[in-house]
Image (cartoon, one colour):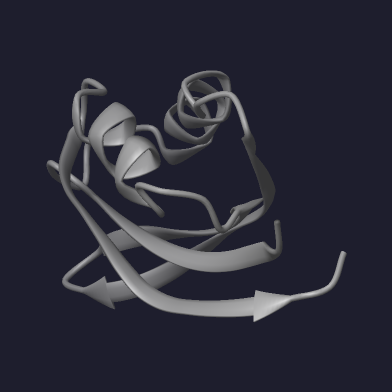
Length: 90
Protein backbone atom coordinates (compact mmCIF):
# COMPACT_ATOMS: atom_id res chain seq x y z
CA UNK A 1 0.00 0.00 0.00
CA UNK A 2 1.28 3.46 -0.92
CA UNK A 3 1.14 6.73 0.94
CA UNK A 4 -1.04 9.73 0.09
CA UNK A 5 -0.44 13.32 1.17
CA UNK A 6 -3.59 15.43 1.25
CA UNK A 7 -3.93 19.15 1.85
CA UNK A 8 -7.28 19.83 3.44
CA UNK A 9 -8.82 23.28 3.99
CA UNK A 10 -10.95 23.67 7.11
CA UNK A 11 -13.11 26.78 7.21
CA UNK A 12 -14.21 27.90 10.68
CA UNK A 13 -17.76 29.12 11.30
CA UNK A 14 -16.52 32.65 11.88
CA UNK A 15 -13.77 34.92 13.14
CA UNK A 16 -14.66 34.13 16.76
CA UNK A 17 -13.45 30.51 16.52
CA UNK A 18 -10.15 29.94 18.35
CA UNK A 19 -8.00 28.35 15.63
CA UNK A 20 -5.37 27.01 18.04
CA UNK A 21 -8.02 25.09 19.98
CA UNK A 22 -9.67 23.93 16.75
CA UNK A 23 -6.35 22.58 15.47
CA UNK A 24 -5.89 20.61 18.69
CA UNK A 25 -9.39 19.14 18.41
CA UNK A 26 -8.90 18.24 14.75
CA UNK A 27 -5.65 16.50 15.63
CA UNK A 28 -7.40 14.32 18.20
CA UNK A 29 -10.31 13.56 15.81
CA UNK A 30 -8.04 12.37 13.01
CA UNK A 31 -9.11 8.79 12.20
CA UNK A 32 -6.87 5.78 12.70
CA UNK A 33 -4.55 5.25 9.73
CA UNK A 34 -4.11 8.98 9.11
CA UNK A 35 -1.92 11.55 10.82
CA UNK A 36 -1.60 15.29 10.60
CA UNK A 37 1.84 16.27 9.38
CA UNK A 38 1.25 19.98 10.00
CA UNK A 39 -1.30 22.76 10.29
CA UNK A 40 -1.01 26.18 8.67
CA UNK A 41 -3.29 29.19 9.04
CA UNK A 42 -4.14 31.05 5.85
CA UNK A 43 -5.87 34.45 5.77
CA UNK A 44 -9.02 34.48 3.61
CA UNK A 45 -10.76 37.88 3.89
CA UNK A 46 -12.15 40.35 6.43
CA UNK A 47 -10.29 38.72 9.34
CA UNK A 48 -11.45 35.20 8.49
CA UNK A 49 -8.71 32.58 8.41
CA UNK A 50 -8.71 28.97 7.24
CA UNK A 51 -6.72 26.04 8.57
CA UNK A 52 -4.74 24.15 5.93
CA UNK A 53 -3.81 20.69 7.17
CA UNK A 54 -1.33 18.33 5.53
CA UNK A 55 -2.51 14.80 6.29
CA UNK A 56 -0.60 11.60 5.56
CA UNK A 57 -2.56 8.38 5.06
CA UNK A 58 -2.54 5.11 3.19
CA UNK A 59 -3.99 5.03 -0.32
CA UNK A 60 -6.60 2.43 0.60
CA UNK A 61 -10.31 2.45 -0.06
CA UNK A 62 -12.16 5.56 1.05
CA UNK A 63 -9.27 7.95 0.50
CA UNK A 64 -9.67 11.19 2.45
CA UNK A 65 -13.36 10.67 3.20
CA UNK A 66 -12.91 9.39 6.79
CA UNK A 67 -10.89 12.52 7.68
CA UNK A 68 -13.40 14.83 5.96
CA UNK A 69 -16.33 13.17 7.74
CA UNK A 70 -14.70 13.29 11.19
CA UNK A 71 -13.54 16.88 10.90
CA UNK A 72 -16.80 18.21 9.46
CA UNK A 73 -18.59 17.09 12.66
CA UNK A 74 -16.27 19.12 14.90
CA UNK A 75 -17.78 22.17 16.62
CA UNK A 76 -16.75 25.43 14.99
CA UNK A 77 -16.17 23.92 11.53
CA UNK A 78 -18.12 25.44 8.63
CA UNK A 79 -16.67 23.26 5.86
CA UNK A 80 -13.91 20.80 4.99
CA UNK A 81 -12.49 20.68 1.47
CA UNK A 82 -9.66 18.65 -0.04
CA UNK A 83 -7.54 21.05 -2.08
CA UNK A 84 -4.69 18.75 -3.15
CA UNK A 85 -3.82 15.06 -3.09
CA UNK A 86 -0.53 13.49 -4.13
CA UNK A 87 1.09 10.12 -3.82
CA UNK A 88 4.45 9.84 -2.20
CA UNK A 89 7.03 7.76 -0.46
CA UNK A 90 7.29 8.00 3.26
